Structure formats: C-alpha cells, structure tokens
Length: 121
Picture (spheres, rainbow, N blue to C red):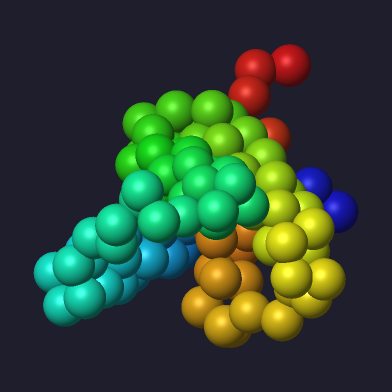
C-alpha cells in the first residue's frame, strides 16, 4: 500500500529529526567528556590507540557533516565505526564497549535511511 504524501513527509522528518537528535546527544556527551576529563596525551598512545582515536574523530566529523550531507555523514559514521571496532578487536581481542557507542551506528543508519528515502530516482 503506497503512503500518502503527508505520511511520507512526516516519516522523512521523523527519521531526520531522530538522526539529528542522536548525533546532537553524542556530540554533547563528547564535549562533556573532553571538558571533564581533558584531552589525553597522544604521545603516550600505542598504534592501536592512535587508530582508534582517529576513527573516533572520523565518526565525530560524520555526526557533524550528517546534518547537511546525509550520505557523507552516514559513510563517515558507519565506516569509522567499523574501523574503530576492528581496531579495538585487534588491540584487545574484545569489542566489549559501552552501550553509548551503539548510538554511533544508529545515527549513521538513520542518516542513510533518510538519504535513501529522499534521493531522486
């Protein structure tokens, strides 16, 4: 059953709004963490920690870029998350992380869904 015009518009705004809210919450949490704990000394990092940190920066940039370019933001978030998890697994042999990290791929997936729904055919 095809969706009506107004239902489709409402669904688009809902998906985009949730993606933006999740990305905003993540950005606020990251800023609070940096302000509260300060920036770590990068010179003391191992190679795996450097790669993980760089992938975190890629994911953060995807959260910001996703507000204007949904596909680019989704690619940065999902690609950065995949590389981040691979790096964590190669360093520690475990990917047991805080549940807050699961919000990154959620935001990336929502940006991707929004782009898929709005692209011209």
